[in-house]
Figure (cartoon, helix red, strand yellow):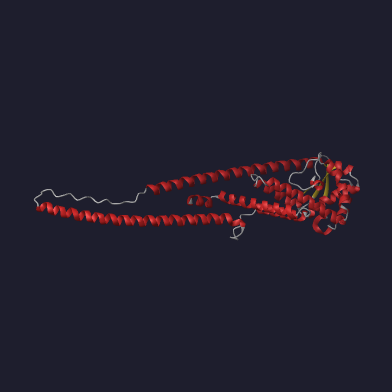
Length: 357
């Protein structure tokens, strides 16, 4: 068992194993908290799911030995220590029994030698010419077969664990590479389509964007330089650009939406920019690539997206000072077009959860 513990502690896959256990515990706890107290608190739900994403990219917590994050490590160390003490006790008992056996054997040998010598003297006195041969004493030696067998068994277990760990890490690296490559290809194709189909925005749309920024009180927050880019294809709405944010607006929405509907749509995207949801979207994409094997990560992604959209809608309504029903009606046309529009990969934008969640 010690060989297993040592192999797990010295192999890289043990870190992944402990982190997987800790992340699973955090996901379950956050899910229960969100379900219990965050039904009508999307901001709080968004913050809790954001903590899950951050936990997925941080190493296991070991600074707090009594925290639930270090239970696995403590259990391994306690188990190893307990087994070490048990083996030491068995070794001491074995040596004590061996010493007793050796002492008894030596006493028996001494008595046998003394008896043989007396018999030889008596035979010589009686005229016997062949003295009795001394009985060879049996030397008790410790059998090494059990120890060798245990060593071989421990070595075999160590080799199996080491091999399994290397295979697990190799498969994990391959999965991360495939997931990252897939997301990169989708994003590259999306941006290529945007470059090929971009058209100048109407002056009314540009003026409405700046007016909406002023109405929401976001002039001094680095959002005043936000641009709007119209694309003549079924893409978006979405936000691109970490340092110079740009709102992607499909031409079909620019032409079909009236001023109020377009204002609500632009306000929704501006709120995404103000909340730095684009950074969170890229972080979520990174987590999905690293944790491709975890069965709960898809659920975390959906819950995080829903919380992001709901909290974005709540903040947009507050900044615009409009009623939620009016805001929902303004976005209804956008959501009716969503089955025709292609969603941007790893980018925030108007999604169906804006009204259906």
